Length: 107
Image 1 (cartoon, one colour):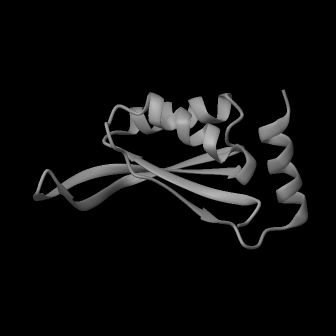
Image 2: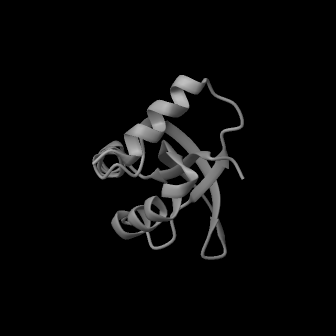
């Protein structure tokens, strides 16, 4: 697994997305967060196909901090079972990786 991850979750409005992003970065569980949206989402929920507007939150963190970030997002997210996925960052400049390490580890 990569030492660095890009983590995504979604929310049903910009304010909630901003709150999730802000709280994760403030807790130093992510070095940065980006909010995109609104996006149109199609999904299955309670056995029915749904459609809605969502805002995506993309966070960058280290593999070492992922479990804490996951626990934090699951605790503060208003949904019972939010999307929460992580993909490896397979390439990035050394200076960016050093900044990310420092951002999530500095107290």
